[in-house]
Length: 566
Image (cartoon, rainbow, N blue to C red; front, side, top):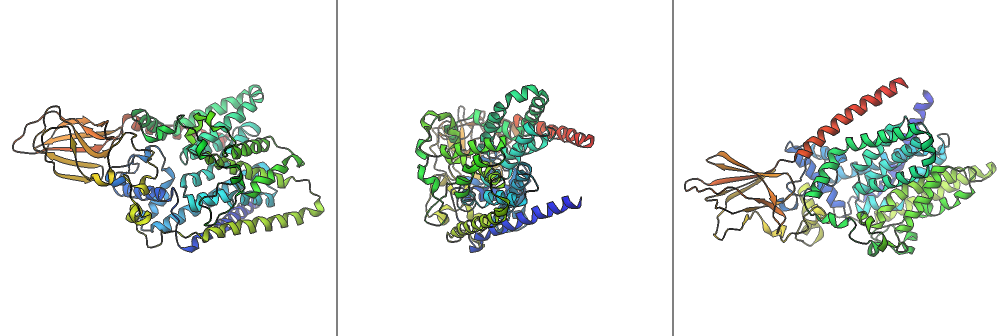
C-alpha cells in the first residue's frame, strides 16, 4: 500500500513539475491569438453567459455572431468547458481562466501518458516512463497547439488518446474486464475533439482486424468489445444524435468537408516535417519533433518486441507521411472530413511518443553504459524542450490581464479588420448555413418580409433566447424572417392582447438561412400582434439526453458490481 501511494506521489510530482516548466512561456503576460484561440475563449465566455441565464446545456450561443446566434454546441462538444466557464462566473479574468484551464489540460495529458507508459513499458522502468511523458508533452506540435494554434479541442484530445491506447491493450492483450478504460477513453475523446475520435476509431478497427484470428478463438472478448461499443454509443448519444439531426435538417458549411474535396492543397511539403522551429519566424509548427521522428526508427534493434508498439510505430509514421504532398490525397476524398492532413499528427504524436519511450527502454545498451546513456539523453531532451519553449516567449500576444470578456468578440480591435460574420466568435463559419446573403455585422434587428407593403416593426426586443417584434397587421401568405440563424428546434408564438393565439414551428429561409415564421393572417386595428421567436429544441434532443443518463446509470451499476466481485 505504501509503495502504491509513493508511486502515485512520484507520478503527480513529476507531471506537475514538467507541466509547470511547460507553461513558463505564459510569463510573457500575453496570449497569442492563433487560428482557434479566440473561438475557444469565446465558447468559454458564451457558456458562462448561458449558465448565468439558467441555461445549463445550451444548444445555441445566442449572443454570438452579432446576436444572430451560433449553434456550435450542437456540432462541437463543450462538455469539458464547464470548468473554465465556472471560473469566469466566480470572477476570474479571461486571461487567468484560459491559463488555468490549459495548465490543467497539460497536467492531465501528462498523467494519462504516464499511466499508459507504465502499462506498456513496465511500471518499474520509471526513468523511461519519464522520457515517454517528456517526448509527449515537450513536443513541438503539442507546443504549437497549446501556444499558437489555440486548439483547445486538440489539447483535450491529448488527455484521452493515451487512455484509448490503454483500453486497446486491455481489450486484446490483458484483462478484458478493464473495459471501463476503453469506454472512458473513447467517450472522453468524442466529447473533446470529433476528428481525433474518428481517427482513433479507425485505428482501433484496424488493430482488431489484425487480431481477428485471436478474437475468433476468444469470443468472450468479442462480447466485451460489443458491450463496450453499445454503451459508449448510448452514453454519448446526447451529443451525437442532435448533431446528426442538425446535419440532416440543413446544409451547413461543414457539410462540404464530407467527401467533396481533396486535401492536396493543404498537404505539407516533405521537408516541413523536419522543420522544428517554434519562434516567431514560423507561424505554426506542424512537425512531431526530432525525438519522435528518429528514435522509433531504432525499434528493430530493441531486445524485446511488443505487438502494440509495432502497430504504433507503423501507424504513427504512416500518418506523418500522410500529412505531406507525397500522399495521393486526390484519391482519398472520403478523408476530407479531416479538414487538414495535419489533424493526423494528433494521434501520431501519442503513438510515436509511446514508441520512442519503449525503444529507449529496451535499447540494446550494455548495463555498464546504461546510466550514462540515460543521463545524457535526459539532458538533451530537457535542453531541446526548453529551447523550443523559449521560442514561444518571443511570440507576444495581444490578449492580456486587462482584456475583458466582452472584448474577446471585437475583431476590429484584435484583428484590425471586419468580415460579414464575427471571425473571433465563429472562426471558420463551419456551422453557418451554406446559402446566405446576409451581412451579419450590418443587418441589425431588421425583420425581412415578402410583403409588397411597407410593414413597420414595432420595437423589436432581443434578449437571451427571445426575439420579439410587433406588427399592426399580419397579411395572408406573408412570412417574416427574424435576424436569427436557423437551426432545427426554433419555434414562434403569436400573441394578441397578451394572449397566446398561435404556436408555430419555424423553418429555414432558403435565401438567407435565417429563421422564417409564417403566421395565420390576422387583422387588428387596435392592438399590435406580437410574435416571439425562441429556441425550444427538438424531441431527439430530449430523448437522447434521457437515453444517455439511463445508460450511464446502468453502466456504472454494472461496473461497480464487477469491481465488487473482483
